[in-house]
Length: 353
Image (tube, rainbow, N blue to C red; front, side, top):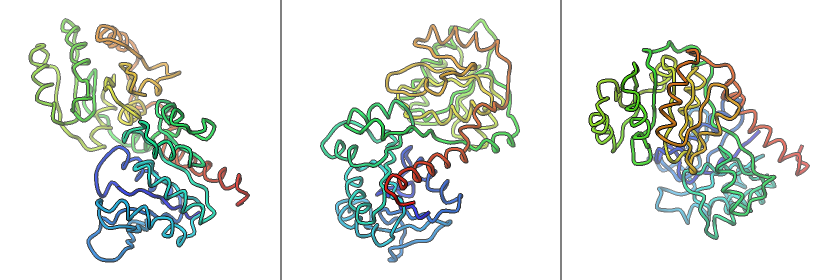
């Protein structure tokens, strides 16, 4: 199948959750043997408007991120020239969805839109039009699905497809040092690590050790808070770590704590759950992390630091594991198949198979 991916900005321009998700989907379909084309702003230095890299064909529809309007004007014709079977567009900027709609119509191909959500799902005329222009929308969680429906998208045309993990990679990684609690996220204003630190401080009279993975502008403030709470000798701020290092840490840990205030999909918690951790989530209205624990016997949802402290104690009674086969359904292969099913359904609806 020839798949045309549309994303004005890519991970080659800027690292973000949206761009990382888009790249992972592109690579999933490439790895399954499909003919993958990415239409984006040119990020390579030479004058050629086309780049072949790692089995992916990149089309530089415009040059640089200052030429968004030029990108939108040129996109429909560029798509038509490739004759795709499916057009798969990112939701940001919303104008690219409308341009991709025109290109998909010219190509007689269905349009699927990847609406990840960390770029915002607030209203606005173009965003509402984009929500209605898609044949199918994919979101990472029910939280984002609900917000997209509020923009006017047909609820029956919005599917939830989670981020994936590499289950085999989890199983092949040796467990790291054993700790009671692990936390992993960029340490910025939305990390809300203070909730976990306050809960741990309530357990000073118990034996425990915690590890914090990640770095960011609020790290010094969080380390200072741990000192003020007199738990800095038991909380290790380990800084940034590679994926393999994080997986090893999760396989060695007993509990993964998720307290961030904003989360469109808890990817790190999914890796940790697959690596056997007990999941503990502090509920926030702008976070979907609790969704991952629905029906999970090794998961707890809380609403306060006091509750969080109680749950951390309760979680200690569960056995330590370094792998949980329940989360094999989130393996990359399974996630890739869900996208392919969506493409096939769209083409069948149009009588193209």
